[in-house]
Image (cartoon, rainbow over all chains, first blue to last red; front, side, top):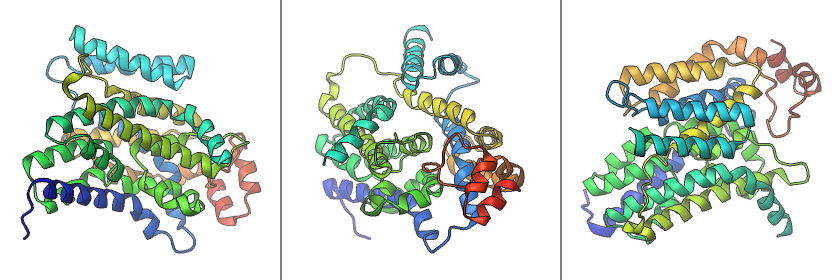
Length: 111
Length: 263
C-alpha cells in the first residue's frame, strides 16, 4: 500500500471523502434511472421527507446529555421557543434566529 | 442571464435560513480546520469538492489522526449513507433538469434536501432555474462561511458556542411545515419514534444508518394506510397545492397514480 504523507495525504483523503459522498447522493439516480420508477420507490420518495426531517432533528440532538447536567434543559427550552414562535408567526427566520439566540444564551450564561 | 438573475432573486429569500446556518457552521468548520493546520485554500477546496456539513468536521479529525484512505472511505459511507434516501424524492424532478442534473445531485445536502422538499417556485420564474439557484446559493454560503472562518482564525472574540443550534432549529421548522402540509402524520411520527428508538438502542455515534433502515421498513409496513392519505404521487413541484386528493387523482393521466391515491 502506498504511504502518502503531508499535503498529498490530505488531498487524497479529501478526494476519497468527496467521491464517496457524491456516490451516496448519486446512487438512487443510477439504480432507478431505467424507464419507469417503481411505484414503491415513488411512494418512499413521497413518504420519506417528513420521516427524514424527524430523523434529522433527533440526529442533531443525539449527543444531548440527558442523565448528566444540564439534562437537556437548554435544548428543550430552545425547541419549545422554536415551536411556539413558528406556530404563532409562521416565519422561518424569526423562529430559527430566536431559537438559536435562546439556546446560545442558555448554554453560555445560564447552565 | 436575465432569467438566471430573476431566478436567483426569487430563490434568495427562501435560502436565508440556510444562509444563517451555513455561514455560522461553515465559520466553525473553517476555524477548526485552520487550527488543525490547514489554511483557507484547504477549507475552500474541501467545501467545494465534498460539501457535506457533518462529514467535513469528521474529515478534520480523520486528517489529524491520520486514518487510512480505506478507513476514511468507510467512515464517509456510514456517515453519509442517509443521502442515498434523499435522491428518491427528486428522481423525476432532477432528471428533467438537463445540464444542471449532475450539480443538483452533487449538492443534495441535508439542508438543501429539506429546503427543496418544502418550497414552491413562484409562478413567474422558471422552476428549474429556481431550484438550481437554491442549491447553488446554499453551496456559496457554505464555501463563504468556511473560508471566512479559516481567515478569521483565532481572531474571533465572541463566543460562538451553541450557534450550531441554527441547524436543529431549521429542521424543526421544516418538520412543522411538513406536518401542516401532509394529510397524514404517520410518516412524521414513524420518523420520530424510529430515530428515538434507534438512538436509545445503538447510541449517538452510529444511529444514522439503522434509523434510516428502520424508517424505510416501517414506511413499507404502513404503505397502504399512508399512501391512501398522501395527496398524490405527482411531482410536488408541478402539483397544485390546493388541489384536493380526489381531484388530483382524477386529473392524473397515469392510472397507476390514480390507483395509488384512491387505494
